[in-house]
Image 1 (cartoon, one colour):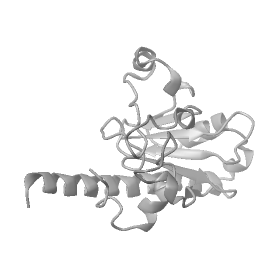
Image 2 (cartoon, rainbow, N blue to C red):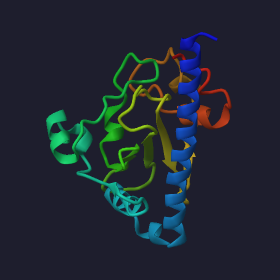
Image 3 (cartoon, rainbow, N blue to C red):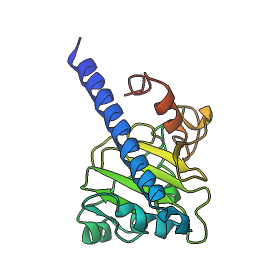
Amino acid sequence: MTLPVLITKHRAQVLQTQFKKCYSEVSQALAQLKKEDEYLSITNGPELQDFLVKQFKEAKAPDRLIYSQTPEKQKELIGFELPVYKSFDKKNEFYKRALDDGFIFINNEYFVFINADYSSISDAAIIIDVNGLNGPNVAGYDLFAFKLDENFNLRSQDKNSLTCTETFPGDHNGFSCSYNAMTDKDYFKNLGW
């Protein structure tokens, strides 16, 4: 095997491992909230952020609108600049509004974005950057969107082959890649590195 092939294979294995680890840890945090019946009092995104951050040792939850701040302000508030994420086809910036309702970083190891507004928790999305500041910072590669179901379980976004393909136009491309990553054992290996 050539060096580029080995590097690609290693990168795919690392991201798959990180994906599984982050999914498991966030799922366990949600399960803990349910076990303590705390989730029954959560009605909006900021409350969800506050409850979730308590479940991770050394996790931090800065200003919930941190993603829309300037890079300079982000550095001032959290000590680093957040990545600019690309859509799955790498042609557009990923849907920014999905990343701006809440933010938790866990020891800079990975990031959790919450897409839920002040008035409701229904249709909340949890978007996980499985490797923090490390690249490639592309939806479907190291950034994955999940949803909370009515029982506070973390679920992959609904299967929608259009929003996880090289041909889907726009900033939502990559939103349903969590489904593929969870159901296709070769998903990470087959990414177009």
